Length: 386
Image (cartoon, rainbow, N blue to C red; front, side):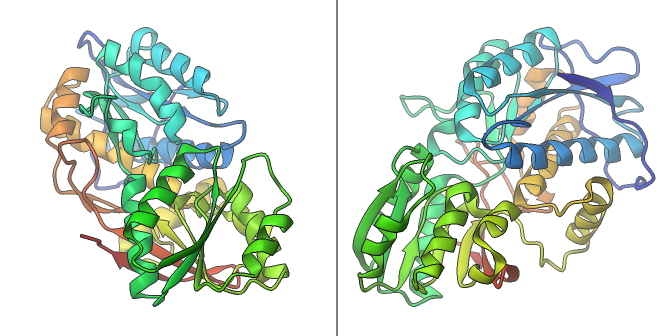
């Protein structure tokens, strides 16, 4: 765990006033500080996502503090590593809400870790904003009721499945598809289901793999013998990169579609840039955007971390400013006041788009489909399925 007050930076006079926090019982920060929690997968299997998001959270807090903080108070950011383990996520959420007494939490990155944290934040009545937990069930309980203290900035899996099916038919004019998904992952299972329900063409074949696999030659050999227009691979970059590499080397040349789990530079490293062409995936953010705010975010992130930001860092950055807007509208830093303002949040303008939260605490926004050719992003298409 790391607790640090992130102070002024040279990038500062940003037009953004501030995110804040207080403790569970409604106490503010101590002295001239306001408390905010951060919990991400900094080590372990999905650390590429978590590290990118944690970096962006700290950068956003630095900017806000440099701009004067919240009513003159600096944000004190308390950070935990969930180690890509759900049990660690549950423990971190409990510590942040009850021991560190933050008034809001940003993170984790993944759906499983976020769901593990939900009982803790509900008991403590402290709002949690996940940048990228996409499983449909994250914001709803088993009875279909909204989780009262849980929000997300990224769109949910079902929306991705619909968007990809719409894009495959409309933009790629696909009449048939093969699905190759991770049958050990709720993420992939949900995406496969929604894609099948919304793709009007023929699903020629549906094949599976598990998260621990690295040799996909057998299943790709079966796929190679099929007649299809697109290959849909619902999964994360670790397996998707290897699948793309092996598929292209075996002569499978059809476009490959994927969800936001493709959105990391490691995918291109694993696949080899020469193999990463005609790849399309859902994204919450485009590096090729001409928006001045997006360009400024990219520049600042590159300077601070000597790395390219991705859509996960962009979502985390926006998550901090979502809480900032809620605090401003609440006029109060207590967790309950922040939560009430989050429920009513509308017309938020971030680098991942303009959105409001719906009744299930999901953002109402469009999806971006990113096109990769020769390992480089060359185009981004906005898709707004009905």
